[in-house]
Image (tube, rainbow, N blue to C red; front, side, top):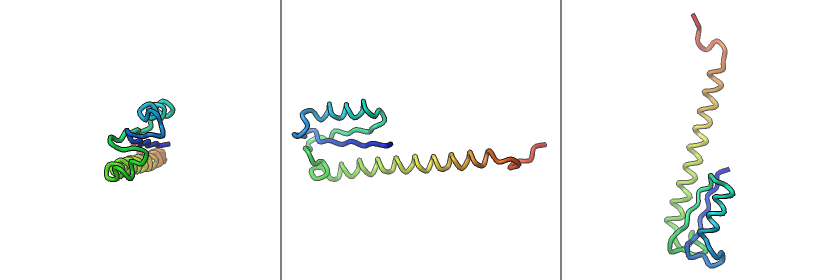
Length: 88
């Protein structure tokens, strides 16, 4: 499943935000992780434009993948049909 993990570089609840993001990537190599500079525990409040841009880009990436998968599935169904093209 797609995973986006964002943390503020100035996070005070987690001792080492960079190491925490590394742990997420180790557990899920396809995870997208972002360390947001000059933000603490609430990057969505402290850096709303940057956070919104990351979330929107992540959502758009997922939408493109879903559309590509749907196109691929349709192509497979059409290509497997017998008699779609008449053979000489």
